[in-house]
Image (cartoon, rainbow, N blue to C red; front, side):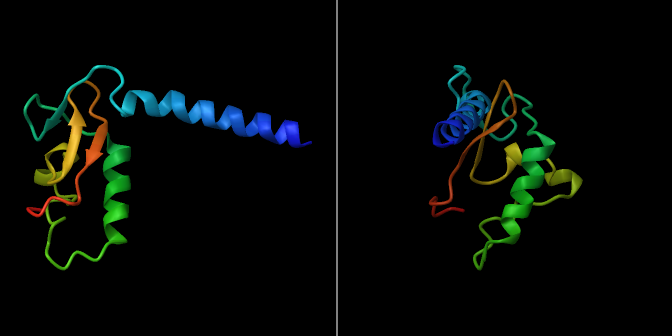
Length: 100
């Protein structure tokens, strides 16, 4: 039984890695900020970040650019968000930036 559960865990980890490797930038894509190459973030990622924002206390408005209105719909243009210019996947979030 332990070996079977270990096999399931290994399969789950491998599946996760297959999906994460492109998002982590191992596909030689550059990281860009903003609209440099008309990068548009993926809708599922944008929705996830909007949900994540709801769980934060943002007294200083550092996440004020994280909005759902049409002019702020592209999460690759949000402060502290860095996207792949090839896939549109969010690759990095910078929360420690004092300008956020």
